[in-house]
Each structure stands twice: as C-alpha cells, then as structure tokens.
Amino acid sequence: MGHVDHGKTSLLDSLRKSNVVENEFGGITQHIGAFSVNLPSGESITFLDTPGHAAFAAMRERGANVTDIVVLVVAADDGVMEQTKQSIIFAKNAGVPIIVAINKIDKPEADIENTKQMLLQHGITVEDYGGDTQAVPVSALKGTNLEKLQQAILTEAEIMDLKASPAGKVRGRVIEASTDVGRGRLVTAIIQSGTLRKGDLLIAGTTWAKVRQMFDENRKPLKEAPPATPVEITGWKELPSAGCEILQGSSESQIKDAISWRKDNQFKEKEDKIFEEIEEKQQKLREIYLERRNSIRLKGYRRRSMQKKKESEAADTSPQLAVVIKGDVDGSVEAILNCLSTYNSSQCRLDILRYDVGEVNMNDIETAEVFDGEIYAFNVKVPNDISKMAERKEILIREHNVIYKMIDDIKETMTSRIPKEEVEDIIGEAQVLQSFPFHDGKKQLSIAGCKCVKGNLLLSSPFKVIRDDETIYRGSVVSLKHFKKDVNEIKKDMECGLRVSDEDFVFQPGDYIVCYESKMVHTKLDWNPGF
Image (tube, rainbow, N blue to C red; front, side):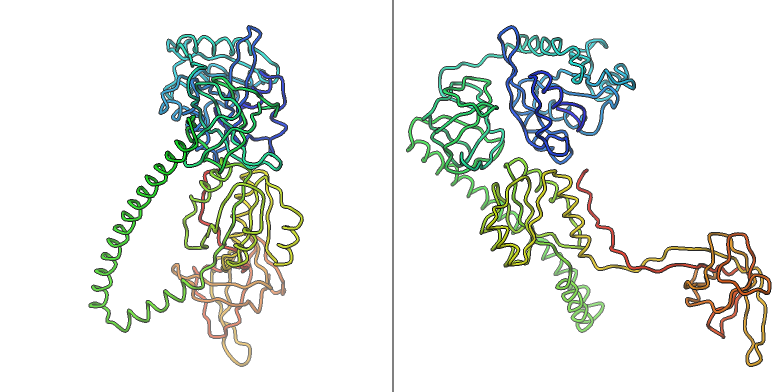
C-alpha cells in the first residue's frame, strides 16, 4: 500500500519478474491485484497490490482488512504523502502490522533518513529509531535489497505464527468481481482457510456459486486452491460485491436458505433506514413549515406566493447531467461512485441513472434515451451494434480507461452546461489628476487629464469610471489624446486627455478609470473529488 507513483506495482514486478505495470492504463493501478511470489526457499508470499490513487480509498481500506501484513511502500525522494498517511490509518484500524519498503533509493534525490523521520511524525517508528517496525531500503528498478524485503516479511509472519488449515470448510474474501466475455461472471478471491475445489458450493453476500472453473493470476487452470492462494472463480449466479466474505456451504438448499435469511435482514435494514430518512425529512418539513409560517406573518401571503413561484421556475430550469456508469469490475464502479458522491452543488444537478459491471448494453441505451442522458464506459467494450444504435439515437457513449480522466470529462461536461456569466478582464487603469472644461461650440464638456498607472488604455475598448469605490460610468471613450495628438492607445506611465461618450458626465480629480474587456465564460464548477 502507499501513495500513487511510489512504485508499488513496479516493486511487485521485480519480485515476481513480470511486467504488471504495463497493463495498467495511465501508469497507475486501478484494481486490486492478487499475486503469488515463489521464493527460492520454496515458500510463497501472496501480495495484494492496492491502487495508490486518491479515488481508490475504499479499495485500499478493503486490502488492509483482508491482508495479514501491510507492506507500506514509500518513495525515498517523496517521503510520506497523502495516500501514505491514509494507508497507515487503514492498516492501524485493521490491526495489521506494517513493514516499510523505502523505494527508489537509486534516485540522486533519495533521502532515506528524512523518510524515516517523516514516518515517525505519523506514528511509524522504525527499528533504527528504537521502534518495532522493520524498514527495508529497496530499489524496484535496480532490484536492490529485494531478498531483505522478502526475509522481513517471512520474519514478521513467523513472529505472528500465521497458520491456516487446508482442511475443513473454505473461507475467503472477494477481492474483485467482474464480467468476462467467454468466462462469464468472474470473482477474484483470496482463500483464507480450507481448500477450494471444483464443484464446491460457495456463498458471498446474497449470491452463490457452484465452482465451475478456477484460474491463477496468469489465467492458468487450477484443480485446487489451498489457503493464501489468489484464485479466479467462475460459476456465480450473480456478482457479489468486492470485500464480501466467502463461505462454503454443504448443499444448495442450505445456501439458498442462508441467502433468503440475508435478504430478509437486508430488507429490514433498508426498511429501518427508510423510516429514519422519513423521520428526518418530516423534521425538516416541520422546520420549513415554521419558517414559512413566520415568513407569511412578516411579509404577507401574496409576496410569499410570488417568491415561491420564482423559486419553482428557477428550479425547473436548472442545468443537469444524467449519466449511466459502466465499469469493468465492481471495485472500479465503486471508486467512480465514491468520486461522484463528493459532488454537491446547485450549479448543475448530477443524476446517476444506473450503474453496473460489464459491457454497454441495450438497457443502458434505453435508460439514457428516456432521460436524455450520457453513458460513461470505464475500461469496457462497446459492441458494434450498441455503438451504432447509440449513434442513431444521438446518445453519447464516452469511453475511458483512466479513472481521473473520466471524472475530469464528467466535470467538463457539467461545466459546459452551466450558463455563462460575464466577466471583465482589466486591460489598463488610469488616475484622473485634473478635470478640464472644454467647449466644442455647442456644449461645455469635461476632459479628464490623467495618467496610465497600469497596463494600456485602448480607445476601442469599453471603460468604466470609479469614484469612492462605486462605478459611476460605463461606456465608450470618444477621444484619447497624448498632448494634442489623437491616439488609439496609451501605455503605462503616459499622460493623456480622455473624454467619454456621455456629454453630461463630469470628471473629478481622484476618479479611477478602468479599461476592460468583457467576455462570457462558464462558471467554475464547485466540486473537488479529492484528486
């Protein structure tokens, strides 16, 4: 675990002499991966590679709760960063011991001692400083000290006396869940006790499976999976949620009874939650009623009715974006929804019509069509017939394989739907030093004798005059002179004479003249998804 780009997957690649990182879009891990590393001693270590990006906090927390030991990867040139701190908290909350791998020691700017000091500030005291946390300086790129890191893990496991019986009923944990074309519903799991075999009956959440096939992380078929084995399992009736506990059942009837009981409990919990929400809404309504009653007494019924009508009309015309979310695995959809849940603004309403794991399908098209929505597909295929149908129905399908780029795309789309507002870019500023009367033969006019103190004054641009912090004139300038010469531009520190189009306007010494450019821009979206 650790911060994004601190080399977790690269370290794992070096340990298992593979190249996992090349398979991750954007150079960042976006799934929890489960891998076994065989050691020269004949022993093996199973690693869960959790994402470091901010969007995948739930995955990191789930990883900490499933594992026995957390290897905290900290880059020696960066030190403790935001997701490093978060990983420490998750590990402590889960009661899991930490081993620190101080990575990237090959870099010239690496500072191992400073990294240890930073860890100390966050409650991690390494052995060199009198603590009990092992810290191993490594280089995933050069392969430095990998054997020491492996030995540190084995030593910690020996101290903890980690043992799991291969006999008895299977118990495990869902790491990830997805739909695979050709293999169907697929669950990546860690077996924690017992030995999983083909034909075994499993329950996870409110779904179950009769194990049809098993694969290792390289998609090679497995006949059995003893404790600490990462395994991909097919044969699921429905996809369980990532993080669910897996238990082995004795018969289909026993499993179906257990699922029925769990669903009843879920319904009761949901019902209780609904009642709580109703009570909360009723309380708010009571507060609104009292507030409106007092408002009626103070302002009168008619004024209130008009205000209510205006508010209703404003609400009906507010911009919105309706979306369908499709993801490759349950964890990806979870991370996307977590990011989107941080959005809370009246500028543009975000409606999530539906979300699911798997390819974009007919139901997604129909849902988007009914609600005039768009489809966001994360790392999944869009079949040709679905793509053509979406094109005919003028429904946008936006495909992405990097989560933060997908979130940025949603933000940009929402921003584009917010009505533009007028903003002023200041081109130049001038101070009126003196006001001169001027008679053009018909009427006496006011000329400002001023000095440009900032930027440029352009004859072609609009101007405003500010007096005592109040704008008292907006409009054009009809005359701009440098000495007696008519000019189109006055630069900084130049003096000039200036006359506005309003013939009745009279300048006063101390007035501030601002030359500006007016343009329409989209309001910045008030949303920070934690990137």
